[in-house]
Image 1 (cartoon, rainbow, N blue to C red):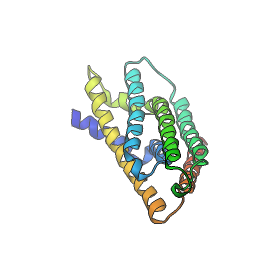
Image 2 (tube, rainbow, N blue to C red):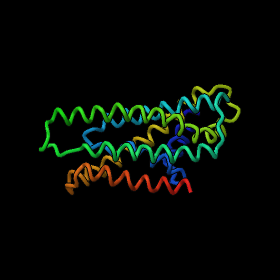
Image 3 (cartoon, rainbow, N blue to C red):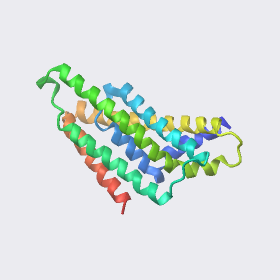
Image 4 (cartoon, rainbow, N blue to C red):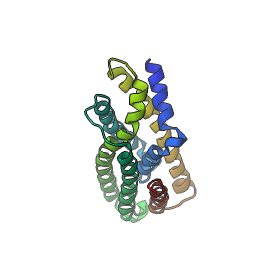
Length: 200
């Protein structure tokens, strides 16, 4: 049972048909570089915790929100994350042109604010998972192991998305020497436009 639910969670997060969750995870990573990978993994875990709580509440029939509302809220979370990224990217400067302590302060501020975004928006994205999860849950008496296993699969899938995004940032910023600021703004604009299309 554990393996089956883990595989379902893994396949669900990486399903091209459900790319809204993929867009959100990429948006979360857009202001980070590959050297920040530990912070990003913690950030994505905060997102997992958020949607895990919603999945549990939904499976227990404590929370029930219409699918149409959820389909509207999820793109909004993506767009808001991108707007936040663009705003924060305005203060990015080259390492050689600023005090390193200032750069560290900027990153710490970004991480703490993004933790809040990831956790809060995770609640909303959990609603997007909820109908699928309830459908596969069937008549199982306990939701604990299915929920844990499903979320392990989701987390593994998200790690793959994170690693792919960080590798792209490494290629563009470290190899092709595109400024971090322009990389973050560029990818955020692309994702925001894409998410806007989901609302049409």
